[in-house]
Amino acid sequence: MLRRVWNVLWRCACAALACSLSRSDAADPFPAAALPGVSLNQSIRRYEPSGLVWHTRLNRLYSVSDGSAAVSARVFSLATDGTGVAYWPVVGDLEAICIADPTSDFLYVGTEQPNQIKEFRISTGVVTRTFDLDQWMWRTSGQGLEALTFVPDASSAEGGRFYAGLQDDGTVFSFSLPILTSETSTAVTFLGSFNPVPGLSDLSGLDYERTTGVLYAIYDTANLMRATTLAGGLLKEWTLPGKDQEGIAFVGDDLFIAEDSGDIVRYSPFQAVPEPAGLVTAAAAVAAAWLRFGRRAVRRRPTVRWRSARPAGAGVPGRTPRWG
Image (cartoon, rainbow, N blue to C red; front, top):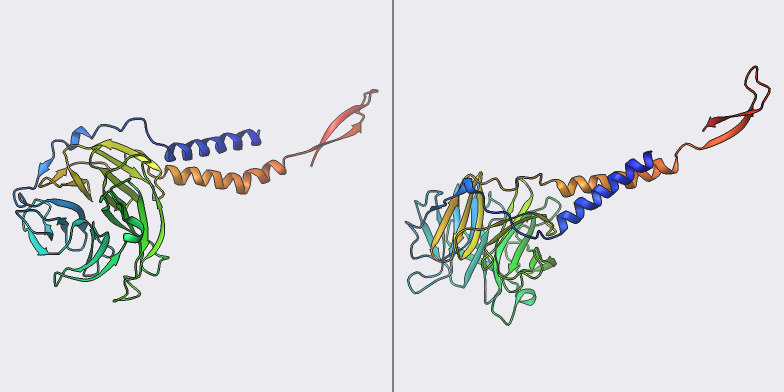
């Protein structure tokens, strides 16, 4: 009986893990309750927002505009209602932005052609150093770094790692940069890569939601948003309204999407992952429990040793089990 119970749990764990790592046949529709979106373009009509992040200490959205005939390339910030726009000119093909430590004075800006991460000091509006990623992310197509986010990790000397998304084939690269151990080093340590949706290109935005531990990726051409584990395992997919989506940020129940055509749109309320985000963790826990206890229990299952016995008043030998 015990063996059967553990076998069932083991199969459930394997099924849950397989489900989390597979791609859904079709994305869920975008939540109707969050529609229609509210445009913030009254203040940024000439901008080309590409990348988006929420600053929890300053309570402002930060984005980048990659430059056009009307507006030079710049880092800019605004309130969640679109007011109070402030900006700083920055040279480069700006495509993405993230925050590593909200208590610090720095933002990190991703550029394409060349593929780089620029450390940007908010108080002075100056780039303090640049990290070159071309060794790993350069592509002849010119579709390079398009998305950037930071994943905190208490065990890391640098406080975590950067995830940089490649537009060309959708690969996400992980890097460690010396943002805490040095103020001047531009060394880059490559940690690995994965593809959240194999075969799907035009990855245009990434956001790591720290309160839930979920990674979000958006795809411009496919109009798709995917919630994944940090290893790329599927949690949820949605179709994405709008067009030219190139940045994503969560602020509580509000989802903000930056559109390169000149807008930032707020969708609210948006429940990020309706089903438990802990599916993979739970499945792994069951699997670990089986490995630790289940096999031991099966190995120690009761054995039966028979001994002869003669029931009282009976003339025919019988056999009674002895459990041990």
